[in-house]
Image 1 (cartoon, rainbow, N blue to C red):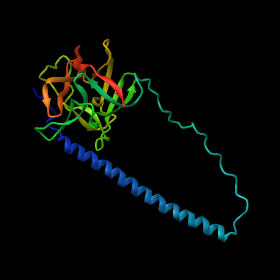
Image 2: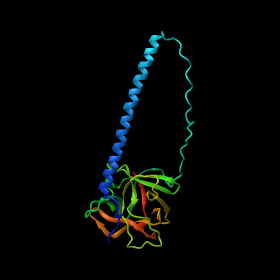
Image 3: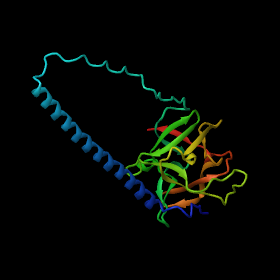
Image 4: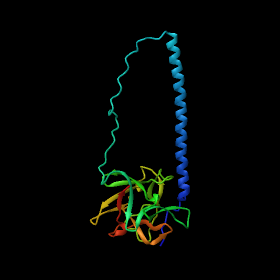
Length: 233
């Protein structure tokens, strides 16, 4: 058994390097702006000192404008009443914890059910709706990336066991619905994790990698292989 990925997409390491480069460019841009602002501030202070000395200054200063009251921002943050608090979690299955793993045969990172003692199994979970989350990575080097199915959208009616797609780290993009996952509470405790395409995150026993069992998309069905506990760190 093997999975698939977007054939037109870059390898995962290339994708990560591109994301890291973008982050570095943003940081450099921020430093440039900071230097420019500092230079302007120096000029303004010098002009103020010169004006004060030229006109003799004054012991009394004009009343300052009252500071804007806190909490008057026009943009109010929306609160989401999620199924559990946002935070760092492990996604635990009877086969282990979901986590980053190297494919082994090709130059890609994938998600596998592996031993729970590895830092690669730590995720940050953020609710964007009452039952919908975005899942990011905590491990160093991947913090700018989010979990996503590494393939096109598939309808449940069309998906078969042969239509397996890996999950992989993608640069976080709030407009990408495939980086959102809907959680469904199971009667036997735990959650099913649904993709925006209507499939479920599933562990495959016949799909092995050096670090653990393969994890991919599958038609949603009952069973422990699609049941996950979110264990807080």
